[in-house]
Length: 446
Ligand code: GLU
Image (cartoon, rainbow, N blue to C red; front, side, top):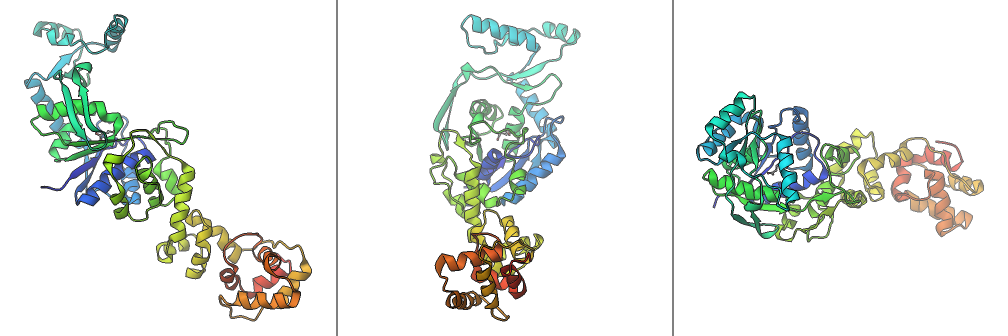
């Protein structure tokens, strides 16, 4: 059997949001797990709204998520194939010219509704004679083109939704080509799925009705339909739909606010699935957790607070080698010792900056009992220091002052860091160094 071929097909009319990432990841991870090909197809037939900079941004977002496509195609470069397919459908009598204006259609729709009839297109244009058409065109009317559906029930086995069916007699014949000759999404998508030998169409459940129409198009064009999987959609935490154009929860904004790609990917994939939502750092492992048959049918809520937790979890486990360059770019020194000391206090990698400032920058110490901290300052051992210095020193302070437990450690922490919580002082102390430690314990900003 040949390996699967899947495609993620965004229109480059905005930045990808977390819901788009879900679709992209479900495709890419399926390809990854099956040794298949992940295709990025830009649905950019709408030349007005599509922008090359959005296409570039989408490729960047996919690269950031760790799922660069194996192949990129642009519908704007493939119009001749759509023209050819449209001509074939015309010659078979499956694509017919219609001349109604929006107002006429709206009027008919209302009349049907008033009579208690379903508001579907009545196929009036099918009974136009050549003469009628000539007249309409002489009047300056340009045709749009509808696909003549077979009025039968289309069935498919959906990887998510199971046995699915749509009765096409309940649908209007869909418009495939507009008055100005431009294509709506429906036909180019099928033409490309055939040309690119797409084996599985994995997309949001907002496309379920399209699927019945598209299965008829595959058949009309002489191709076997692919397997379909329609996943549930993501909403915001408050239950609203996400919109690419409104820039809702865009991947770029999540990236800029410092979230790890793996945290975003884990949430995008696992929310609303049978798996508990957890941070999975490795995409191969995440791919193993995708189970189409158990994706929930209900919309899944995306909660940014949950993203914080997943991110923190990943950061707490991150080895120094994975962050070395990023820390350097943030101007953070202290090497592995610093990273290992602070990582469990962080939600995001960049939060390490504030801890580094405590080590490298100037802080105002918090001192309640100057006598105690001055005494402690006197007991600081000479450098060089290492991670056992803290223990040696605090034992000496304990002996000298009699302070112990919280009463011993908290005043030292407040004086040395200006805070009453934070990473282990045994690691921070050698990084702070004798000079700064002495000054801070004496109450000086240092
Ligand atoms: N451009 C379509 C969309 O973004 C693609 C749908 C599909 O995957 O077929 O909704």
